[in-house]
Amino acid sequence: MGEFGLIAAMAARMEAAPGAIVGIGDDAAVLHVGDSRVVATTDLLVEGRHFRLDWSGPADIGIKAAARSLADVAAMGAVPEALLVGLGAPAGLPAAWAQDLASGLAGEARRAGAHVIGGDLSGAAQILLAVTALGTMAGREPVTRGGARPADVVAVAGRLGYSAAGLALLQAGLSGPAEVLAAHRRPQPLYDAGPEAVALGATSMIDVSDGLLQDLGHLAAASGVLIDVATAGLASGEPLVAAARALGLDPAATGHPGPLAWMLSGGEDHALAATFPPGAALPSRWAVIGRVREGRGVLLDGANYRGESGWQHFR
Amino acid sequence: MGEFGLIAAMAARMEAAPGAIVGIGDDAAVLHVGDSRVVATTDLLVEGRHFRLDWSGPADIGIKAAARSLADVAAMGAVPEALLVGLGAPAGLPAAWAQDLASGLAGEARRAGAHVIGGDLSGAAQILLAVTALGTMAGREPVTRGGARPADVVAVAGRLGYSAAGLALLQAGLSGPAEVLAAHRRPQPLYDAGPEAVALGATSMIDVSDGLLQDLGHLAAASGVLIDVATAGLASGEPLVAAARALGLDPAATGHPGPLAWMLSGGEDHALAATFPPGAALPSRWAVIGRVREGRGVLLDGANYRGESGWQHFR
Image 1 (cartoon, rainbow over the protein chains, first blue to last red):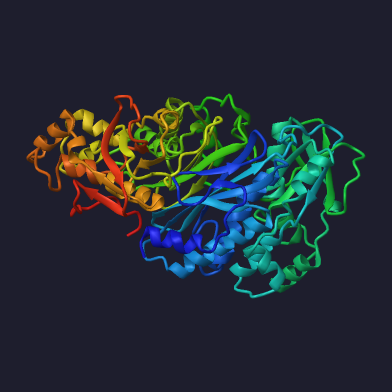
Image 2 (cartoon, one colour):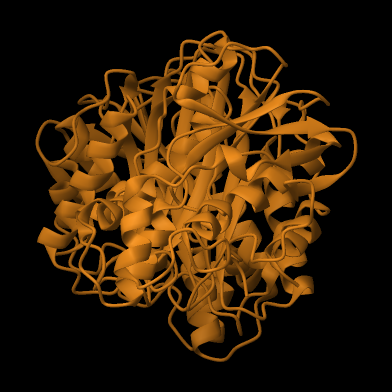
C-alpha cells in the first residue's frame, strides 16, 4: 500500500471538520477560526522515546500524540479546533496499524472538540508523529506563562503522577492496577479547564507535560516569581497508592520512586497548572497546591527539592 | 547542550514575528491572522530521504524544509504568515549545525513574508523536520485543486526540473553547473504568484512538489477533468541544457534522464501550477503549458506518458 492508499485508509477513520472550509486532500487546509487570532503548537512523539510499541497500541499512541498538542492549546486558555498530523514510519507499516492510529488521533481530537484537517506521510527509520494543534481564543485573551504575581494561588486541574506510575509498572513487568496503566497509555487532559481558567481570572497557565516542578519552574521563570509548592495539597489518590503497593514500595515514602515523586516529576498526564488571584473561588477540580511569592524558582514546602524534577527531551 | 539550550540557540537566529501575540517559548503561539480563516499545512523532511547531509548543509536543509510548506500555503492563494518547526535529531547534534538550520528556516520564512513562531525538539534516530506553515487568505477565496474546467488554460510559475537535474549531477559526483546545484539545494518558490493567481482568476491551483505530471494528475482528479500538457510549452532553459551536457546526455532527447523528463517528473522546485479561464491575460512568469479538456487524467501532447511521473513518498 503506497502513500496515497495509506492516507485514504487513515482519512476514512476521520470525520470531516465542520470548521474546515478546505479539509484533507488539498495543498493545505483552510480553517474557519471565528476570531482573527489562531493558537498553534507542534509536538513530536518518537518511538522508543515517547512510546514503546510493546507497551502501547496504535490507538493509544494516537491518543497520546493528540493529547500532547491539544493540551498545549488548552493551556493558553483556548479552544482546540484542529490537528495536522505528520507520520513518519518504516516502509511496510501495516494499514490496520495506521488506521487504528488514525482512530486514536481522531477520537482524542473529538474529545477536545477538534478534528484532523491535514497531514503528511513519509518513510522514516522509526515511527514518529509530528502533531500540530490549532485553536481559537474565541474572544478570550491568551493566558501565558508570564503573568503570575506574588500572593497568587497555584492550582492544578487533572491527574498528576499517573503516567509516571504506569510507566514504572510497565518497566517492572506488572499488568495492574489497570487504571494506572490506562492513564499511562491514554492521558485524559481536562481540555475545557483551560478556557475555564480564563473565566476564573487565571494570571498564568502551563500544561504539565514534563513534570510539575520542572513546568512550574518554566512558569516561575517567565513570570519572574517564586512558586512554593505544598506537599499537603498533593494527596496521592488510591490508584497511585495501589501502584506503589504493587511495586513493593511504601506508599507514604516521599523519595523516588513513589507516589509523591511521581506527582512532582512525572509528566505526560497533561494536567493544567495555573495561578489565580488570592481569594479566587475555584471549582473542586482545581486543587490548590501552592502559593506564588517574591523571588525566583520553585520550592517544595519552602525548601529545595533534591529529586529529579522532570523529563529531559534531548540527552 | 540540552533541549532548552539548543532551543535558545536556535531562537537567537530568528526574528520575533510582528503578527505573533505570543511567540516562541510558551505552551503555544498565538498569531494574529487578520481574517477569520487560517491556512495550515504540515510536511515532513527526513534525512536520507528528502536530503543528504553530504549534499546539503544545514542552512540548505532549513530553506528546503521551509519552502516545502510555505509553497503549499501559496498554492491555496494565501499569504504565508508563520512556521512551526519540529526537529528530531540524534543526541550530540552540534549547536552550530542547529543554528545554521534555524538561519535557513528563518531566512526562507522571511523571503515569504513569514516568521518562525514555535516548535519542538526531540531525540530521534535520524535528523528530521516537521514544518507546519500557517497563512492568511487576507480576504481572498481559497483556490483548491478542484475547480479546473474544460477549456481552461494550464500555466506554471517557477522552475521545473532544476531540482531533479541538480540531484542527477550530485548522484554523478559532478560539481556544476552551479546554478542547477544551487536550485536543488535551495528551491526558490514564487510565493507571491499564489495570491497573484487568485487575482488573475485562477480556477484551480497546486504546488508542484512531486512532479508536474503527477501533481497535475491530482488536480485533474480533484476537478474531474483531463489535462493535456504540450511539450511545446516546456522549453528547457540553458541551465538544464548545460546540466544534460555535463552528464553526457543529449539535451534534446525526450527520454529519461534528460531535460524534458526532469521537467515532467522532477519535484521539489515548488513551482505553482494553476488553471485559468480561456483568454486570461497572464503575466510572463506564468508559462502556458497545456489545456483542460473533458475527460479524466493527464496526457502529454495528446498521448499517455510512458516515463516515471514523479516521486513516491512511501515505498
